[in-house]
Image (cartoon, rainbow, N blue to C red):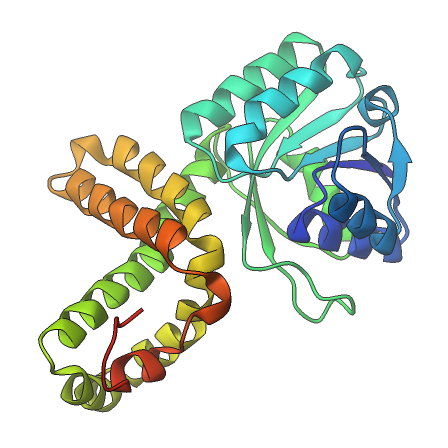
Length: 279
């Protein structure tokens, strides 16, 4: 099976490496890509390809920054073969997923709406993300399971996998953001130590969650900001939800622009520090 991966970020490269290890031929277009992207593609064993070659693969996985999803799709459209399945795996608005699907299907090619839950797969396959798949092409996309990926099909139209991804992001990233905000509040009011002590007694899992999530905030806050913007737009009909996600977006914007990711403390360090900002 020939699979093209659009995007050579951490997720795309790791998925490509696993697919190749399990027997798929994996191609990726590298024209205009950075040296870091080229290095990741090489390390993953993905073969450099033109867009024409990618468009004639059995399947294309788009794993790119959300803002680039539509543009990347449009650049691929002239090269799509009718037999090709295009799977958008990006964290995008459900309406955007449906729009991409319509563009793909106008060419005669097939489309599946995908959502990736979890981090990049490990080289040995011991740690795997879960690919949710929706839309008419979901059964074709389920073949990814034959090459080591975990897949789950939604009996739902295109856009549903993207909607599920956004709803889950609202919980996982929203909980991280709320914990960060309350950590800041406790720090500002000088009650960081009893705050931490009580959290450890009443919510030990939450503290462990924060300690795992806080070091990532500097590097991921910019991407999470985009997801909060999508959620704020999606949640306009839910009382109070839009304000929540707009507020979390403000937090992630500040963290992305003002806090170097390499200096992020753990939750315990942040709260127990005698002075300074909680984050």
